[in-house]
Image 1 (cartoon, rainbow, N blue to C red):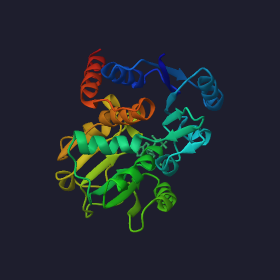
Image 2 (cartoon, rainbow, N blue to C red):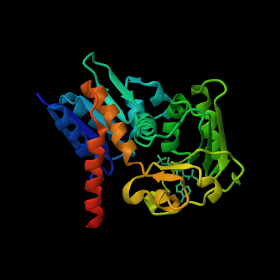
Image 3 (cartoon, rainbow, N blue to C red):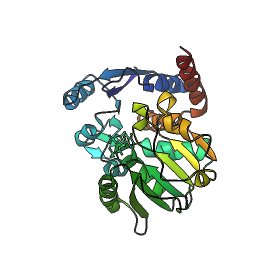
Length: 283
Ligand code: ATR
C-alpha cells in the first residue's frame, strides 16, 4: 500500500515539495503518493481531518496555514512551540497527531553540511522578524551560534519577537533586536541571513552592514530561485552568498524521515531540483 502524503497551502501550485518527495521515494524504493492541495484560509482543520480520514499519513504545511497547523496538532515539538508554527504533520499509528517545524533544522543542515559554515559561537544577523525568522532562532542557538541580532524594518516587531523567544532559550543566549536602518557597521558578524519576504515582491533591502563587513561574511537568503533578490544583491560583496534551495530540500528530508523512518541522500535531489529551476528560468 502507498504511503499517502501531501502539501497544503494557498497557493500551492508552485510548490516543489511533490517533486522533492517523489525523488526521495524513488531513491529509497518507498511507495509514496504525494499530492498538493490548495486550501483557503479558514478551512485548514476540516481539510486536514478529511485527509486523515482518507488514510493520510503526513502533511507538509506552507503559507498561510503554519499557525493553524500548530493549533491543530495534538503534540507540537519544542521547535514548533518556539516557532508557533508547524510545517510537518504526522498522523501517527498510536492515534496522536504530532506537529514539527523542520525549517530551522533544514537551514542548519544546509549551512553546515552543504556549505561548510562553522556555526559554533558564530555571530549572526537575521534580517526580518516574521514567521521565517521566528522559525530558525532556536535551531541556530541549538547548533551553537554565539549571538543573534534580529534587524527588522519595524523595530517593535524585532523587539517583541526577541521577548517572546526568550523563554525558549538557554540562559545567556545573546538575542537582540534592532531596526533595519540602524548602523550596525561596528558589529562583528560571521553570518547574515535574509528572512524577509522582500524578495517575493522583487525588492532589494537597505542593509545595516557595510561592504567591508560583508567581505568576511557568509550570506544566506532563505528565498530561492527568482525570489532570492537578496542573494543576487549581495553576491558581488559577500565572502560567499547562497540562496535557500538547500534549506527547502533539507527541511523536506527531515519531514520524510519523520514519516518513512529513514533519511534520503539530499545531494542528488538538490542537483535535480536546481536543474529543474534552471530550465524554468530559461523559459
Ligand atoms: P514570513 O512568514 O515570510 O516571515 P511575514 O511574517 O509577513 O512573512 O514577515 C515578513 C518579514 O519581511 C517582516 O519582517 C517584514 O518587515 P516588517 O515587520 O517591517 O513588515 C519583512 N519585509 C517585507 N518586505 C520588506 C521590505 N521591502 N524591506 C524590509 N523588510 C521587509
